[in-house]
Picture 1: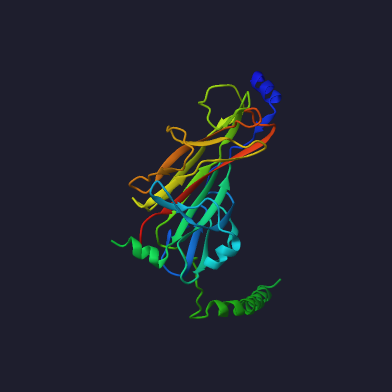
Picture 2 (picture 1 turned 90 degrees about the horizontal axis):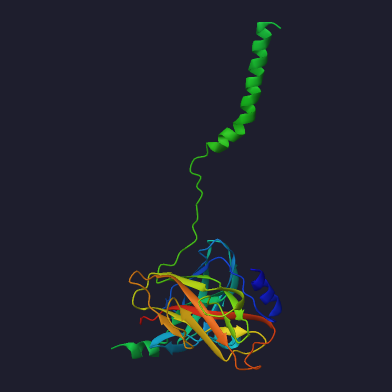
Length: 139
Length: 174
């Protein structure tokens, strides 16, 4: 123990990350089928958490569709979907229903609820699929 | 005090009490009053819940490696603790959980950024996880590892933070 403390004192580069209790985020629905509707965001833990709804483009990972890592710029995102509020705090065990409205003739995109905790950023994403993209997937 | 006087006083008290109670009695007797008990709505559809716990990082004695993995050999400063992820959903084969390589922020840029899930191996590319037939993913350890070839293969003095992004989506077509 003393050796470890001595070593920690000698080393200049410190990697700091506090261990923290569990945090959970839920979102529904995961597929947006109507231009207007509601998203339900849930906090199933006993801790207050800050949630942000952000818009992302689509990418493929190992043959599966998922959201890009970087959100679209605010102006571009607001041209695709309107939703209020996009940033809010959720109390322990609380849910919030957020109304959305997708602009007409928009390409596919994801709207993701994001919550950051320590090493892990959790994202749950609902997909808006353009009519043409849906048609392409039909057999 | 005579008994007739006490009876008279009791009568007056009873009369006053009745008058005092009369208004509230008449309110309580109102017929047809209703009060709704409201419930906030719920959305019935596919859902996904991700539960996470944060981890902690340590730096190797010679400063060339930062990691959350205590199984790596060497002497470290700090405490290595994995992050964890768990998923509960009503998705089946269409549910997708993607874990992207971590990002390190701090004075010296990482040359390699890798993630390891459970007892798997380290990877510098995004990993896809399968949900179980019940739509869930049990708690799974998430380790990160960073190395650098900058600054003489050493992370410069400073504080370093790392974040790995875990994403749950439904890949089903409409």
